[in-house]
Image 1: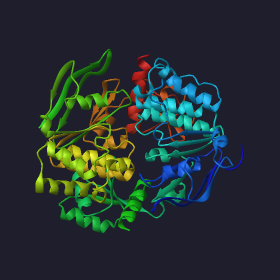
Image 2: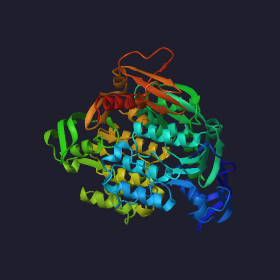
Image 3: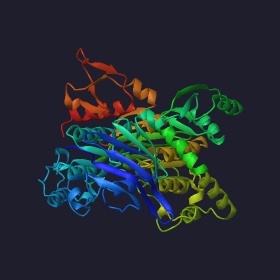
Length: 289
Length: 273
């Protein structure tokens, strides 16, 4: 396997007057896990649907496995959409059989955890089990490129670790993976990140590249809820990391004044910013414009 | 006022969904419930909301008109606008006229939903729809607020709005019980409850849970015992519940994610299913 697996060249998609994806260029190579980040509505799913040939571009071009994203190329793709793409009125075993027939591949065996529930309708399985079935269906034909839209949303910690084992395993065997996530710990498991905001690709590269020049101040205090309320009322871009309060792109002097005025004692310390803080700053810039 | 579920057991057919569970939710604080699929999170929340019958045990909760409940499903009507959804629910609680208008404006503003007030719920993003559900659960200023995975599938920016709303409700005296799959969120709660297979694995403040965690978590490229290991980024973590880890392994301070996974593995590996 060589060459670029997924490529967008200056891709734009409009819906009426609304520009969902705005002049985006990106690519995914074999063996790499690329994380696609952005707030709800940033254009991630629209970009994915164009890359897979499920939605036409308004301008620009896309390539799937070096060609146009048609049925022939999609045979070599594994896709797990946000809605999982399973048939709720079929059982887990029937879903896997259907998918295997469609891709002309061998029918995968159900994992031990699901073996006793092969005859349960998919819509009656818990979400985590449905996700396992969707992954099995997407991986059974050994796809060269894997596209996963929020694969671990609503999944518990143990199952999440297992799904990431599968994802990294696919990349180690040479597949290219494009994955969207809202879970920043997951973003850190990717080889490379892309950040979208309002349809535009605003940053790409490592975690440091995504964070860019965003800065942050950590506020340590006995009662986080009180300090959070005071800073929030003052219009500061406040974030929570565990129980620590953090403020993006803030002047420690101004924060100190706000907290003192509210009668709150706190220590303020400049800290490295996070990806979430960059996203918060972008969201505020977008709503201000 | 402290609300509670005491020694609660719930059975659906032959499935034991909750097994002798006791959780207290004091006014003015946020209690977080974490656990996997089928752990019993939703059942615990629904039991406190009076939505499922107990086989045994007791529930202490306010009457329905002083209780707010956001179910795991959307919790709003797709064919109504944001304003219509809020007004409909508010009407049930007898909120109307200027009082309703003021309350609606205040909540829309705090949830950053004012620009979307006239939009159909069906046209909202996932994050916006969750915030609308939250507003509908809280519009009547309930004394007990029960939120079933309010932040699942929501982007980090909207998640902050939701936490702000939940912490404001607690700051004004409400007892808040919420479930989540984001362990960094659970850390933030005054009290956290870890459920697995309908039983409580551990509960307490984050510091108490961390202090009470026995055993060692190590980190390495290849685990010694795969059934006790899990992936964390590029490396694997492994849990040593009893005996000390062998020489050559590197111990790491476990965070809540490690603790929850380690305790789930201990339960799984001790009880062959």
